[in-house]
Image (cartoon, rainbow, N blue to C red):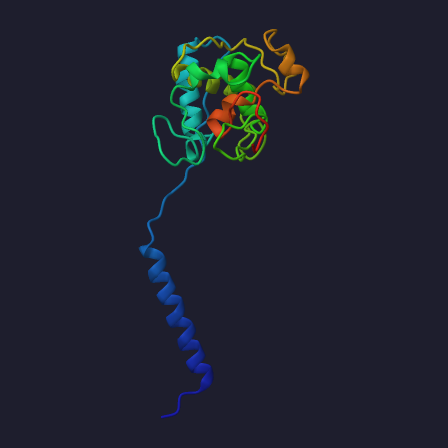
Length: 198
């Protein structure tokens, strides 16, 4: 019996579709939900800010896609364990809050030795954290080896609202930006006075 060519082609198409449908079902599926909106109020205490900051890092901020806390070995970006204690000494002239803010607003400003640039500016799309969300993230990062000193009234350079840079970083502000190391440390950058990519 001679089967027409068009029928053979149709049978091949159906068999191929069935095969790839079957294989596709073998691949584990993960449902990704949109990030949960976190409510932030201007009267939050630093401890509350740190808790919210962790939630933001787990969710909307996508921080733990690349960063870890308490891991060692070959890492994509720097491990954040102890960043609260290291932040003030990363870039001369920057306080811990200024360094962390610089790392989030300008992640390529300071690159941690041994890592490549690559962290996105989290205040812009696709992540798009607000200034208040960034303050909460900084509060959480300060708890990792340090003490939370940031409040919801803290003004950080680089914020969309045009906030003034803290007085402690005039040299860094003059050289364009005072918020890159925390993100750098959190994003793969951070060593005093080192240019990105070095």
